[in-house]
Each structure stands twice: as C-alpha cells, then as structure tokens.
Image (cartoon, rainbow, N blue to C red):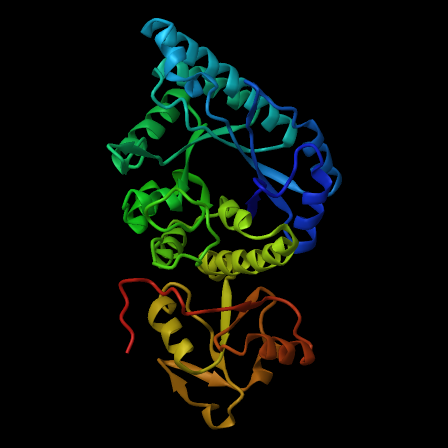
Amino acid sequence: MNVSFKSIINPQKPMRGIGVLQQSGFDSIMLPIDYFDGTIGDYAGIIEKCKENGIRIPVAYAPRTFAEMTTENDVAQVSEESIKESIKKSIKKSIDESIKICKEAGSRYLIVDSCWNESEEFLLEIGKEAAACGVSLLMRNQYKNSRNRIVRGDHAEISQALELVDGLNHKMGEEVFGFCVDTGVCALCRNDVYPFLTALGRRIKAVILRDCDGYHDVHMMLFSGIQPAIDWPGVVRGLRKIDFDGEMVIDFFSTINAFPSFLRPQLYALMKSVTDYFCWQAGMELRLKRYPFRVLFGAGNMCRKYMKAYAEKYPPLFTCDNNPDLWGTEICGLEVKPPEALKDLPENCGIFICNIYYREIEEQLREMGIHKNIEYFNDDYMPPVLHFE
C-alpha cells in the first residue's frame, strides 16, 4: 500500500516526513510531481533518501501542464493555434521529464491526466518513450465543472476508457497504457463503482483510495465521510472480482491538513491500520487462491458464510473448533474436527480463522507449534449476490 506524500514530505527537508512514515509502518509512497515556477522541481533528494531508507516509489503522478495554468489574460494575447501548440509542447516536456523521474525512482507507473485528448500519434510517441524506460502510462477518471455542477469528465465513462486504452495498446503491440481508478472521482461523478471496476478489469494498474463528501474534491481518510459517499463494499468486492494485485494509493491530505501538526504522527498510525484493513479485505480472495489446500478454524456463522460464498471455488478440507461438542459433526457438509487435527496438514495448506477472536486463536495455534500459513477470513464484505439468513 502506497501513501501520497502530499502534505507529509517536505521536498526541501524530506527525512522528517520519511521518518514519520516509516515509524507509522508505511514502506512505499506515490510521488506527486509538481511544477515550481513553471518548471518541474528537483526530486533527486527525495528519491535518494527514499532509496537509502528502503521506501519504494512504484507510482508517480505527472503534473498538470504549465500551459494549462495560464490566465485568461495570457490566452487573450495569443492565437488559438499558438495556444494549442504551446500546450502540446508543455505536455510533451512535462511527460518527458516525469518519465525520467520515474526511471530514476524505479517507478513502474506514471499517472497522466493532461494528455488524453491529444492525437493518437502523440500518445503513441510518448508511449514509446515510456516503454523504453519500463514505465506504464495510466489515465485517471476525472470530473469537470459545468455551470457550477460537477459532471463526468474524461474517462469517467467506461466505454471511453476501454476504447482508448485497448486501442493504444493494440497499436503499441504491448501493454503500455493502463488505468488508475480514483474512488473520490467515482463518488463525485456518481459512478457505480462495482461495475466500473469490473468492466475495466485487468487494465486497472493502480487505485487511488480516498473518501469525500460526494460534493467537493477533497481527499479524506477512508471511512471518515459523514455520509456514505463512497461505496466501500462495492470497491472491495470489485477489486476482489478482478483479482486486483496492482498498486493501491491512500490519499488523505485534506484530513492531514485539518489536524494540528503535533497530532499528525498519531493520525498516520491510524491511517496505517485503516489501510492494512482495506488491503486485507480487498485481497481476501487472492489469499484463498494462494493455497492449493485450505482448512477453516471456527464452526459458527462466519464458517457458514464462507461455505455459502466460497465452498465451491475454494473448498476447505475441514473446519475445526474449540468446542468438543461439535467434534465429529458437520456444518454445511463440512466435517468439524478438534484443533489437534491441524498438526497433520499438508505443507502448502492455509489455515483460515473464521472467528472474531483472531489474535487469540492465532496465539493458540502458535502455542501448538503451528507458525506458518495462518490467515484471517472475514465476512464484512461478502459477494453481493449472496443473501445470508
């Protein structure tokens, strides 16, 4: 899980922010590349300190072009053709420099917002430059303002995103272009996030996770919205459905800025716990799929939900329980055994605890001499088509 370093790391004094992130348990960041006085800043110091301290930078975010940020007075001084040419040159320079920064940082993905309306020839040109550096270019779903109303912008429509990504990759002959889904934009544009994620599928290489109020472009801590603007169950279920194993970026700088600096280290620690929880939930099926064999620990309601949702796809060998009255019985056709039966498991068998007393049961297993392949199963976000009694 990556964290956007915006409002956390000072480019002039990077070590303080890097140290705070490390103390909170984060080991990777998204690098938002920005303009300073019309030119891209020097990121060598941040990249060097991250490498020295074992912080990965798998994702970077290209800046909006400087030409796009000119004022109306500036625009009035030049012709429309000159404006277009200026923007094109600015976009090209911005992306070229950003790709170089990605190569230096070891970033696999560069999120680019500002170039997708350019010609196919232009996009293929920057695609070749990115591919030569081992970088993939990701478009992001966006919104726009129309008469003071937020409406869907570039690539907030599934068909548009699919057509562009697939068409470019077909011309490239390799997978250079991909997609980054921003959950905040999904909420602002009223996208139904589950079909949005599942339609894009393996084209999604990164997900920006942030909460918002559904009306303003804010970057809030997950699950912190007063109203449920983000369909978090839909996000989790969608990522499970597509077996997502790309980069997840947590972006909560609006929440950070709302807190006094003295309290922020505790906030980062809380955010790490929240992101760990989200990664666990989103990767639940990937964990089940990891093992050729699996058993369950627990013979209650959570076990029943597992059997209804996953027994056919990921059948367990058996379940066990601490209650001796259940030994030798069956639950949903699954035999219940004593915990001692776990000592005779195959080497590559996962033990999935289906009980809210996760840590206590894990400690019990370790005291039994079982130290490997211990996993937690949870029923907070079950497949939406299932109805449990």
